[in-house]
Amino acid sequence: MAKDTATSTGATLQQGINNAGTAYTSSSGNSPARTTGFGVTDSNTTVSATASAINTYVNASWYAYQESTTGKERVAGAYVYTVIVTPNPGAGTAQVVDITITIAALAADAVTASPAYSTAYIGTSTSSNTADAAVSALATTSADAVAGLTVNLRNISNGSGASESVTITTTAGLVGDSSVRGRSVVLKYTGSSTTYSIFPDGTTGNATISISTPSVTFSSKTMSFYAASAKTITATVGTPLLGVGANAGAVRGVALDASGNVWTGTAYIVASSAADALIAGSATTPVSCGAYDAANSRHNCPVTAIAAGTAKFKIIDAATVALATATSNEVSVTVSTATMASVKIEFDKATYAPNERAMIYITPLDSTGKAMQSAAYTSVLAAGGITVNGQLSYVGSTTTADSLTAVTGFTTAAQNSSTSRARAGAIQYTVFMPVSGGTVTLSATGGTALPVALRTVGGLTATATVTDSGAAALAAVTALATTVASLKTLITTLTNLVLKIQKKVKA
Image (cartoon, rainbow, N blue to C red; front, side):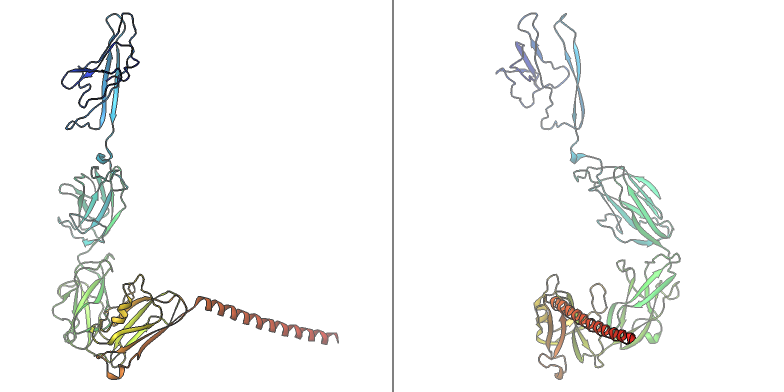
C-alpha cells in the first residue's frame, strides 16, 4: 500500500490488489485507510506508479506489510519477499530487492525449557510426584518399577510448550521408560509432565541420579537400594510405660544390611518367650511393624499389652522366627494398670527470661508418685481448670487462655519428643511468660477422680520466676560496686602495711 501519496510525483498510484483481485487506490491523496483482508497476497500481485508526462522522474513510496485474518494466523519464522521494480521499456534497468519479515515465536509457544520454572522430583509413585521424598527399595532385580522421576519442563513464560530430550544417569539401579532402560539414557519428553521409572538391578547402596536437558540441569536426586535381608537390627523402647491394649510404636528398630545401608523392608516384633507373651505380644506369631518410618529413619513396632508386668521383645527381619536372618537385641517393656492417686502441675523450668516460651505439664501419678501409662483421664481437675496469676500470652501457640481454664480431663502422651517437647505420661500446654519480672503462679482444684484430700481449692500449684532484665542489671552493678569497695579496702590495708615495714627498715 502507498506510504506517502502527498509527496509522490506519480499521477496515479495503484495501492494493491485485494483478496478478490480488485485494485484499490487512494481517494484522498494521502495514505488510505487499510481495509482488513487487503494487501499483496501472492507473487503475481503488482503495484504501479504512472508519470504525468514523458521524461519525468517518478517518486513513490509503499509499505510492505503482512496481514492475518481469522483462521489464517501467521506462524513464527522468516518470510522473504522479492520486490521487482520495472521501468518503462528502454528507460532503465529493472531492480530486484528481497525483503525479509521475521516473526518471532510467542514466549508461550517456546519449546526451550526454562531453569526458572522447570522441576524434577523423585518419589515412590511411578505416575506422578509433586515433591521429593525419601525413597528406599529392595535391590533384587525386578521388572517392576520401585520409584519414579517426575520431570516438568516449562518454557520462559511458565507455559507447558517446552519439549527437550531428557538425559538421566544413575549410579545404581536402572532408569527408563517403556522402551529404554539403562544406567545412562536419553529419553523422550512426552508431555507437560513425564514420569520416568526407576528399577532395581541387584546393586545395593545409595544411588545418585543426575537429570538434565539441553537447557536445564536439575539438582541430583538420591535413593537407596537395600539387600533382601538385614544384617543388624538395634532395638530401643519408644514407650516407657504401656497400658493394657494396643500401644503403637512401643518398640523401635534401626536395621542395616550387610553393606551398612539402611534396611527398610518389613520388620516384625516377637515376644522373647511364652512367659513374656502372657504380659504382651506373641511368641509364636510375630507382628508386623508396618511401613518403614522414613521421616525418623526407623521401624515403629506395636505391642498389644494383656496384663501388668514386664515383657521382653526382639525385632526380626522375617514373618517367622525360623526365616529370620537378623535378630535385634532384647528390650523390656513395662505394662501398668495403675490408677491415678494424685496429679502434679509444673513448669518445665524454674526461671525464665521475659517473654520466653514455657511448657506447662500436668502429670497423673500413681500411689508411688510415679508417672503413669498413657490414657484418657477424666475429672482430674475441677471446673475452672487452671488459674494463672501472671500475664501469660499465647501468640504463636495453639494454646489459648481458655485452654487452661477449661481443662479438667485430658489424654496423656505415650512417648517423649525432643521436637514437640512432649513428655511421656503428661499433657503439655505451651505459653509465653510475661515481659516483666516477677513470679507466675498456677493453681487448680482437684477433680472427682482424685482422693478427697487432694481436692482442696487451689491446692494444686506450680510457680516460676521471670527474671526482670532491669533488676538483673541493677543487681550486677551493685555486686560490682561491692567488689570494688572490697578491693579498695584491701589496697588501703596493704599500703599501710608497706609503710610500716619501710619505717622499721629505716630505724
